[in-house]
Image (cartoon, rainbow, N blue to C red; front, side):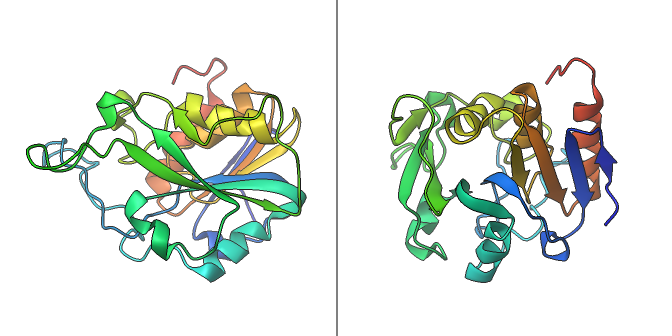
Length: 221
């Protein structure tokens, strides 16, 4: 199992996550395809990020989640992003549903006859039981965001948001696992906080973007 990139703290693998059997991770934090065939509408047709995300028509299954959770040690947390429209069809029952409030910049949907859908759902669960770090967090998490603020991937998430989950659920030196790493934002968030990280991505161009981000001596984005 050769790595696409490794610096001793962060490791990136290229390919389908089913091909890899990661073990001993301390946190699963990932943003898999939602199964909605998402294509962003605000980019021009010439933009290289207009294309569909690989696997986004199928979404994830129960067996996919079981394969991901096999990477975790016992008594560890997991967070999996999902579309609000997919909550009722999510393959497993989480401990709780969290809501990421994107603020006004995240508003999408019918601009004339609909409410602005400015949030995303996050399934939160545990393998065994582990207490959260710090003061008890709220289930609605505000972090203003628009994909235009970080144009490396169609569904990129903010580093600040991911770091909150990492701080709530891990200690320094522990390992964060993201089997749908995209452009490597989870890995960058983990590295900045003194955690180790493992990421897997099926599209090689995003592996390259992530490797470039993580190889910077000072992380600029």
